[in-house]
Image 1: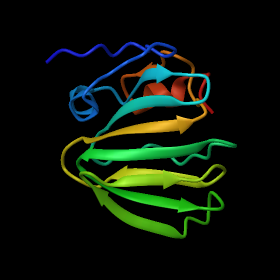
Image 2: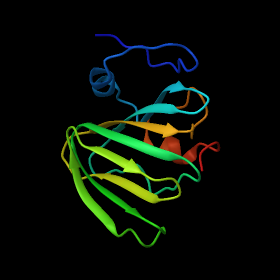
Image 3: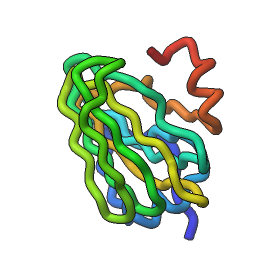
Image 4: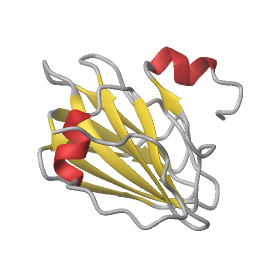
Length: 140
């Protein structure tokens, strides 16, 4: 199956989200940016992670479609007191202003999608690798 991975925000879209997520091989692909919500697909390589981050004023939802990860959250960068293993079909809810990271602890890519309420990345953002995301001057 072929998917459109362009950012089609502000337009109606219907996709099989599981298949769409599994087909994405980029570290991050922004596929829909609205006024108050954004969706990205992610493929985290074994031993890599999302990157320790906090979204000020933005709640976040992540859904694991495939793989095994370790979710960490806390009120400060050096105080991640919530730690839980995650895998296929798990949902992660990250409150606004909460530090968090998800590490791939499996032996295959960790495939997930995430919803930001409101948007966190520029519309159409694509990062083929984690390093590309780190090097992007538009990212926090």
